[in-house]
Amino acid sequence: MALQITAARPDPALLDLPWELPLETWPEEHLAALPRGISRHVVRFVKLSGRVLAVKEIKADIAVREYQMLRMLGRLDLPCVVPFGVVSGREATGGSPLDACLITRHLQFSLPYRALFSQSLRPDTSTRLIDALAVLLVRLHLIGFWWGDVSLSNTLFRRDAGAFAAYLVDAETGELHQSLTSGQRDHDLEIARVNIAGELMDLEAGGFLEAGVDPVDTSNRIVTRYAELWDELTGVQRFESGDRWRVDERIRRLNELGFDVDELAISTDIGGTTIQIQPKVVDAGHHSRRLLRLTGLDVEENQARRLLNDLDSYRAGSDRQNDDEEIVAHDWLAKIYEPITRTVPRDLAGKLEPAELFHEVLEHRWYLSERAGHDMPIEDAIRDYVSTVLPSKPDEATVVGVDTVEMPVVAMFDDTGDAPRPTPRR
Image (cartoon, rainbow, N blue to C red; front, top):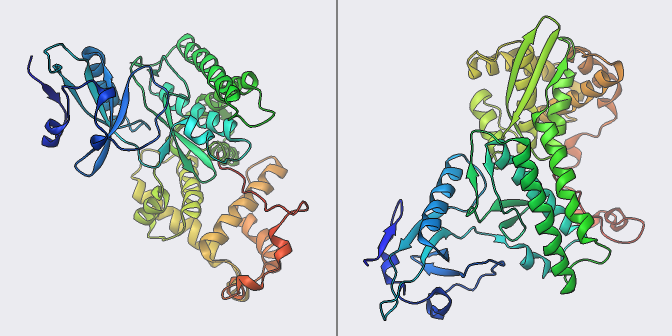
């Protein structure tokens, strides 16, 4: 049987690898020393043409199916390893057949969960990993992917500003449907709960699990965290036409859960407006690039996200979902952003840069609306902010140039004398 290589962009250097040998016996000269997770199959990392690839020995039909599934998930912009190819038709030197190999690109800066627990990590590492896995599972279920083997072992984790981002590694049992039934989703959740409990018990037996963590209670978190995310992301919310602040409130909750709002699907009826928010997690810098393209404003990423949220709310509140996005952005800039930032008296203009000022006005408006129980006009919010909040703020210019060595050391520590940890972003 001739060696067969299936790949979108085959690398001729693949032919230099010892495919006639079982994967577990490959020479060290071909291997890359990277941490591996637990797998039912033999997996090795190999160096090839300046890159690192993960090679998994598996039956040919399963390898081809998983390769195709990973390609589909990649086209759907889901966090998973990138398939590189399938090598089949392997034969040992004596002529006996060998299993095929599925090849994926190594996900840089990622680690399997066991490697993470072998390091000195924060006490809540297990819950943060499960939170990341819950986010991944929700994203997969939203597009109709049933995993069938949800576990920490089948996931890679990347550090993400105090939290973790989860990536699917093993799609061997996965199925892609138009949509999933509640029974299919519950089945995946039960598989996850049982697998995670077993994995954490294994860590506990090896002395790697932080003290006081109950494997069963922790594994149950995947169910509650998933339910919280699913309800927030798919629930339909009704509000009256004057309650635009509730749109912003919904977006805030999604942002706090780690989702960025990419689209607002709006439908109206006689009784009011029904809003359903479809989330999309986007790349770093996405918001600042999008805002710059739409408005010409060059601001920091979090500021851009806040301004874009208001732009999207403005678009929904003015029933302009079908209008060109750039035209709506121009109107928002001319009618909302610029008039608000120009409202600040000249003697207070040095307090905050315009984008940060606008962000704070939006914050102030949200609190005023929440307190009043109805949507507060932004014009009222800026007037109240300028009169009650802005005058007490120090000028930003006075902070520039301060030598941090001269800052009081006590301000860097809490009452226990320990340096405070940043709150993880979800």
